[in-house]
Image (cartoon, rainbow, N blue to C red; front, side):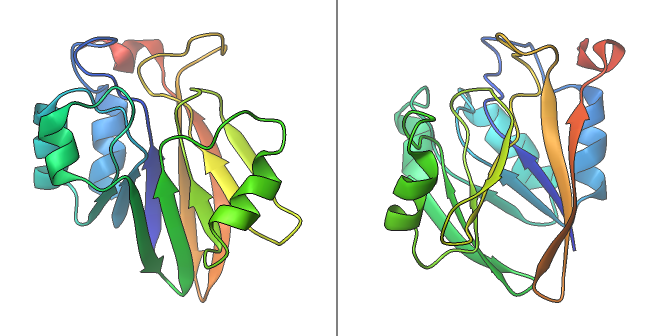
Length: 170
């Protein structure tokens, strides 16, 4: 099962549209996971239309329209792994311990908010993944998203993918 992990798309505030590279990745994925800060419902509509399966949550920049359609926390089983998705996890310091406490029933936690890619494992064995942002790099060298494969209860080939500048143009 091919996964696409994205967060913090911030359309249309940080970008006029999702980059073509991201839309192509949506087409290739079996499941798209979005960890919040969509900003507009049109992006949710677009990903619902183009994704084979979409798992999403709302973020701190998402208004009532998105909050009415999305949960704050999503939990889903994918390929034998238990995923939790949330936008915010708090400060980086102590994140793994908080995640173990707050998501004891998950194998993988996907989160966003910081726009900083993150891939660690907690003391309890929880995999924490933040894909960064495909539209707003903030202090990062480039915009990013994550791809991964899930097979037989294992997370394989987790890759941080830079968004090319040509792709970022609407």
